[in-house]
Image (cartoon, rainbow, N blue to C red; front, side, top):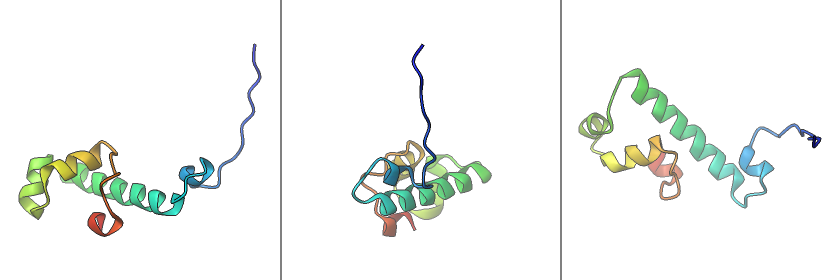
Length: 77
């Protein structure tokens, strides 16, 4: 049976993976998590969130699916 070793991360998985913009990606992920928490807390669908904010339902859908490539920090805030 193979042996595995574990290394404690630094708290930023993107940095652990050696990503170039690790801090930005980590911040975007945390912002997205807060948005998802708010949607869940208020039991909002992406359409209901669009109706309340005017932000495209597709943007909320991408956030829910952790597809943050097209999202900027400014847009998420």
